[in-house]
Image 1 (cartoon, rainbow, N blue to C red):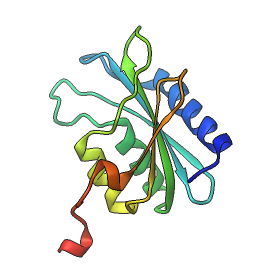
Image 2 (cartoon, rainbow, N blue to C red; image 1 turned 45 degrees about the horizontal axis):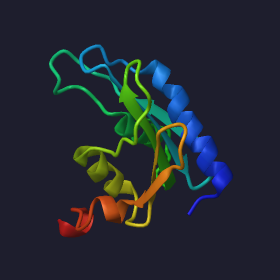
Image 3 (cartoon, one colour; image 1 turned 90 degrees about the vertical axis):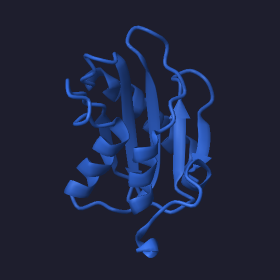
Image 4 (cartoon, rainbow, N blue to C red; image 1 turned 180 degrees about the vertical axis):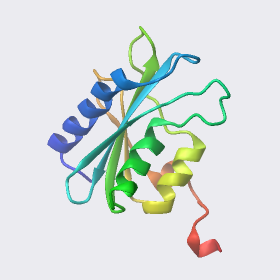
Length: 138
């Protein structure tokens, strides 16, 4: 489990990065902040596309950014989401993002949801994706 200071910093990074979202269709803006085991933070936002299929979630953007820079050892992710112009809400990762996280993170990996004002909600990846499919299944 990461410290309260790390949690606060991670949650704030997820809230702050939402300004960079590209969500002209859903108007639902999500920011994610991924903490490596070494203490570095990689952020990501959702990027939509008119064809919908090529859209990418904030969590996957953060993971892919980190992996593209050689990082694959992660400690936690914080996620902040909500409709444009509305209050933030607790926004859990979609199933695809949970599976991508499972590729790099174990069941004890920490997923933190923030609404920007209340106490963050904490889950393990194992709680959010029990019996995940991984390399050991191949």
